[in-house]
Image 1 (cartoon, rainbow, N blue to C red):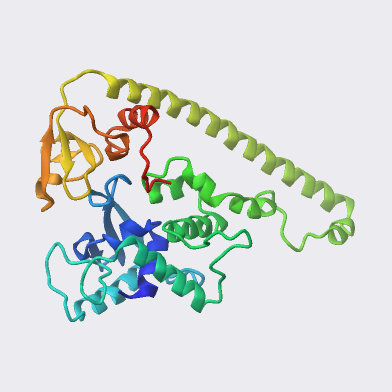
Image 2: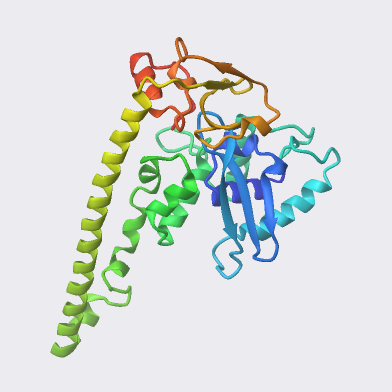
Length: 317
């Protein structure tokens, strides 16, 4: 595979290592007129092969501190087509190994570690913990976007099925811009502000109060939005718990179970009718472990099943 392309594109699209390793060359589409790359990605972290959610990045060449996803993708696709084992079709890996196969999760993590070593980054923390893992690209991308000032909710949307986990990823990154949010620049040191005249100080205080009032209004709006979303979630959970007749479909490759929501597609967006993946239909979820239930299709059922009998193995966040 191309390690640099793998790492940068996975970071820009906030991918897990399993999503990078199982990505298909056919999941990319280009709009060369608008210079955009669209990536067909899984809408469920339970099933990385259930593609059905798209994310689009445009050209970022005007941002000197960001890699451009559009031009990186063009460069990578040109390289991919020159791969000795490349074969056109819907199943060829987007980031193939030397043998032309999908990269296992462990190999993707090893690639991150090798890149970290080349960049002089430590691989082990002082506490003895590994600093690179399956979510390295996802966490790095989220933190980078947060520091750059991208709204956290937009990062959540880009990350797809992230829930509140993205808040843990970005941690205190947005706090680094608090001074700028309050209208204070790095040059506004105490000695500088003390040398300002009374009129300038009054104007500065007025500006600060205005910005604080604006922040308070935004916080009130956010609180209202969160309450509304909480009510929607309660209604959604109640709907899923209704005993209506439903048809379930299992991906026999990943073992994940989804609920059919329409003609040939699942609730998480996976178009299984057009997929070459082997599947089987199920009439009930009896005996199915919670970890195998798609968190996007069956959130309530998964939560209840996992609470009753947590699975021993999980690649969840």
